[in-house]
Image (cartoon, rainbow, N blue to C red; front, side):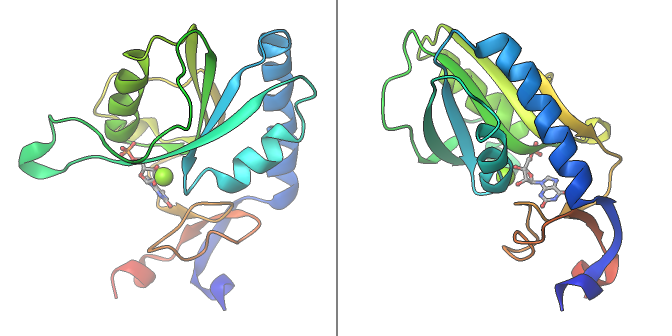
Length: 179
Ligand code: XMP
Ligand code: MG
């Protein structure tokens, strides 16, 4: 069972529900009259985004992107967009939704790319922030929880594409990824 691979539950289903509701309250305050485009970064944001938008009671549209950074020698290059937005974002108020902000490599490049398309505004909402590992000067505008440097799974987050369906967020036992 998946649960045997979890060392510790960091955020229970109830705790996630409470915090997502609070974040939605902040977004209602800031976006109620803006009809934003809410962009989920696949695949990790899908659970968070689904819960979040159901607490938003104003007009909005949704889209999705998938991206990865080049690593190693190419790390200063452009972000690799595997799935791009359906529509132009010029003049739109765009809210990016991501599961976790870690080193910031992927998101900083994605944000730079999206800014070049001239949105009216571009903000970042992440469920989890792991500031200890940050290497890029990027901050989220909305953060669910700030966490220490541990590898976490569940509620959309994966290890090798597994565990995304856990209803809570837990720390993976190191024995799982150390073999
Ligand atoms: P960077 O380092 O570019 O990467 O900010 C962010 C992406 O790395 C993944 N990531 C994690 N995934 N548990 C996960 O399941 C973690 O603890 C974790 N830390 C980073 C994630 O895909 C995120 O989009
Ligand atoms: Mg991700």
